[in-house]
Length: 65
Length: 294
Image (cartoon, rainbow over the protein chains, first blue to last red):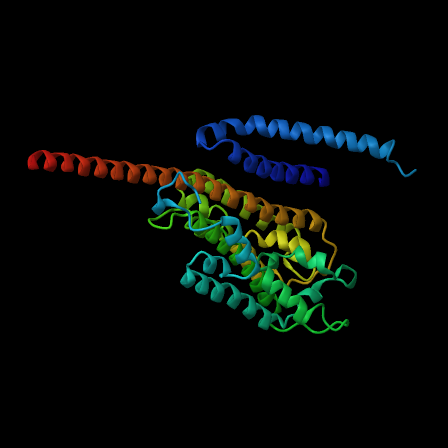
């Protein structure tokens, strides 16, 4: 349950960040809405990748044990 | 001096100088630009709000900080930094208190919000001074009016976009930012709204404008009586909402600036065209009269 809540909070915060970014790149509304799913997908992909790298680092080179 | 512009389209002054002077002392930028009435009004409003806040809080704002966090760097991370002159006066006059805990004045929270609001008002006055400096000495420009839009975009997330006619974006901005602030406050059970408890995170949340003030007045004094599972997540969400509202304010400004510059450019071209037509008409008239005379 805890993990699900955190994933949902991440999804919300990520959408807000992606929307903020997209408003600067797309002055017109039509292209803005169309570009959102792709931007959101890429953002989540890179965040997941960074998370995986951090988890691996925490268990290997950055481990305190 | 810009030699390519007709004399009546020359800007009033250097925008950076006007903005920095306003940062140091509200209204000083407008005095530099030769607009004393705007400067005086700006000074009275911005400094009036700061000194009202100072009176209500008894100058104890920076006693919110833990002793090991007290220093010039930490006070610079507060919204009061927008009104640098008043912040320096505040620190010089009141500092970090006598060194032992004291009871807060009854209106402490409102006073601390007002000094922060003064910083935001002065940032808008800086935007206004920057716009006034770029405006032509004679004639009108929409650049100074952007300060009002920026202020409204801070006061209510999405309102700046709405007033620019970008209503779909306005609704998404409002829903996202106010929704995140409310959800964050619910998760943290209002504990995120206290400036005393979260001095720096509060500065981020403050950027959400009046919704943050409303939540703070209603739920900000809640006592923490048990462990809160999502207090940190709520604090992060609330802070993120405020920080993203800065991007919304910048978006309002840049969109408005582009439109204003297009209109100013069209007006300048129109004026030049009209002046050219007038010159051509007068020379034609002179030719006619000289031919008539001959």
